Image 1 (cartoon, rainbow, N blue to C red):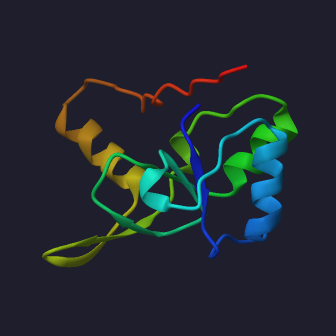
Image 2 (tube, rainbow, N blue to C red):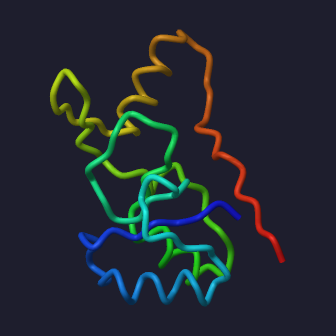
Length: 117
């Protein structure tokens, strides 16, 4: 499984509790956000391939006893780049892409989540 990074800014669940929930679920954690594939609870991001998730993704996955799709849990982010800071809501980006395809309907496809057991 790709490693998770839990931000100290994680709310409403404190990051130590979120880490414990992920570990109990069998996730691999890292203390280095740049080594993580999935970042939980942090709105700051760089333009990269990481998946930034709302903490409710973890809670809802536990509640439903199965891993939830990422689509509605992607975090609205402040993207830091050389040009400055811009704000992005991935759901709005997906809606814009749908309107540009003129009739083509594409759902967000979650990246594969590999579980090693």
